[in-house]
Image (cartoon, rainbow, N blue to C red; front, side, top):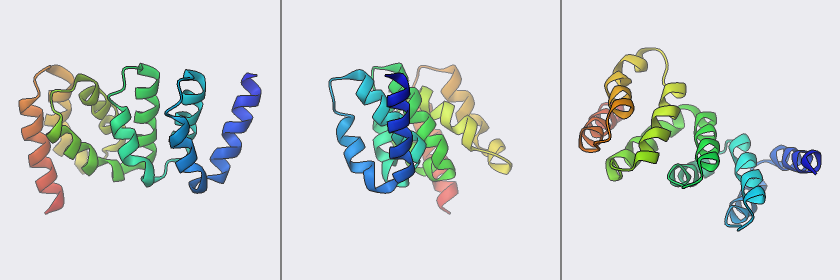
Length: 146
């Protein structure tokens, strides 16, 4: 059964973009195994169409789903940075969101950006407060967009 699921997921991943909508529908399933497989496939497809879906999923109560969402965002690379900062500005009090964003930024931000993102990474890691996170996210977003 595990091999069959893995083979099916790999086939869907190979199809890529055309199956995204259907996989997102499967993520609404009550069956956690089916849901996990669909999210895993989406994270492996790593299409920017899934960006918002992954960010919303970072706040899911299931840690496995949150992890897969973070992996999907990491797969999207720097394309995930601005939307993640915007999410932090709106929902800076969400513990799950902050943890997920921290994980993603740790993996995605490289080179010169690493130093620019250091304050927010420290804030995301060390505090339960959201206000300073929102301020830092807003400042970063402005500097990136300019």
